[in-house]
Image (cartoon, rainbow, N blue to C red; front, side):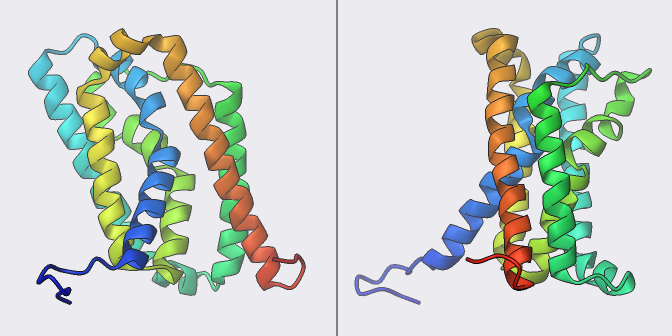
Length: 208
């Protein structure tokens, strides 16, 4: 809708939802943790092969999350699960993954670096149970337009981190990257706790 000065008026509600979805998806997908793993996987490949793998990983991430976003309602109905039940279970998954990241995890490798486009970088490191749970819940009850835009923006952020992984690690160091990964894990734990609390409120067990 045009504003008084002739410009477009930004829907602040839609914008705030987009920012919330985007930030949470980035925290959950954790490009800080994915960057060093990507380097470990592709260290013997030529730079152009690294770029091609980063492009492929990003496209697969977007495709998987779009699939989850558009079929989430159907999956919930198919398994006769309510949004609150899935939200509660998803909150537990988020908490568990956040605690696992806070404790640290071993380096992940694949026999063939080119397999990194699917396993383990795309699944389960970037698109794991936590990411899919978050997308299903908010595709079912949130603003799907904001969520789709956030998926694209978060995937673009991951892509940028993968392309710049070597330079970023050289600049900040692996120790700093591990610290950043643990900080983002605290936010993921907070999102998980919030999802559990929301489900308990809807069930009348907890107060707002």
